[in-house]
Image (cartoon, rainbow, N blue to C red; front, side, top):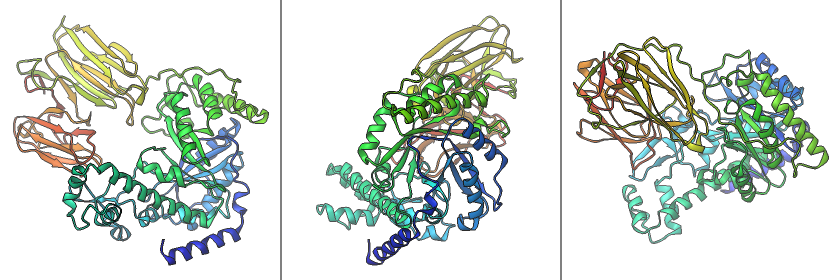
Length: 620
């Protein structure tokens, strides 16, 4: 830290101390945080939306003592916190009136956390240089404190505002921040000062190889991570200079290098840090993993508070009283994503529906039971021996499956039907439709394998439909298991297998079709998980291009019909021009970065289907 920054930080600290703790008087954290999460877009109106008032009131009645609100702006490139002070104050007052302390969550700005040349301030900040020596223009180099000041520029006015308003915590969502180790000049020169055996003038394209040759790649990555942690430490210190008692926090908990600075340096003896952990998010329930994470988080910094999170509709309401009670007793509380799921008046987005035959009232009753028991334990000093609600394992949830809008197309088999040709099976994600051709009296043969296991402990659910959408089979596949089934086709024609492992990045699964002819429906899109080989109809079938939906941090290699391999490096969505014929598209992993999400579609295509082989086609 240079002399000017030291003087500035000292002045800020004095100002923070002089301001006192007026804003913190109504924001003291309870012994256990019994919380829930929602979001709010600033609109410049000193008015609390009705859906927030409804949820705050319901939370108060159920014995919650905290709410987390992710505050975002919707009117300008940069949030102006003090311009919207009165709107923020009204939200805080509405929560406090229901007995809820108010925690602020912030996304980076912009929310995707990408470096963009259109923002003048971004152009002044360093980009990552990857292991091949290429500049990754949309990713920030995170060991520079200026990057954190820019991504969370709005944290500083919120820290000032916390001296006036009862903001219980100021927390940061880092999920969207790309975590790439950089080989840029500044980082490399800093490493060479620590390891003089390397030349500071070595070209960027040779640095990674030289580290591998010297078996010091891990050491370099640790050095980079330590520098990033120091930048995060400085960021936290600057916020605490504005308000020394301000509680900071982040999500999701990471024990990898990106989490080091947050885990070690957000908390001080005067202000704990809240580490929000998604270890219970996907429905796995209270387990030894939760306890292990709690111990890890306390080991990083004893002033940390560990708060596991639920995803509301990943749990049956009947299980939640037990799950929330034991999680809250063993850690520093619990929270959940997202309260919108429990608001009957809100138009819920896809994936927010509650399980069948349950209502928000069922969930609030369960949470209320847990909260009452936790409050009794707090009063009695018995949190260490939670016995008021027996621990019961969480049931495996079955995601909703909606096929009401499905139109089963008229398709005809083409090709030899050779089952040994092409790709044996596909790995898919989200809800997908697979069309299967079968003759009357022939078995429809399917093997479904749940691949996500405890990483996404939600069941697969599937339905097999005939051409008139009559249900022939409707079953579930539990995490880690397999279901191989046969159904006799009552008539010759096209059948539809509709499968889901949950919407929004939940369970992934393998599909193997034992019939000669089938097609994966890509009329909207088809979500293939990880690199695979597929066959698609080309230009002469009305498909000029194949779109591949990717995240900007993903890379992959693809080739058409075994030809030239094209290396796509952290580019985001890709459009592939298709030749005539049935085109073999082979996707492979890239050594540059991860290769996971392949969302395939055919814009304005006339044959929007994906196949396992040119011999196993179903064509219009």
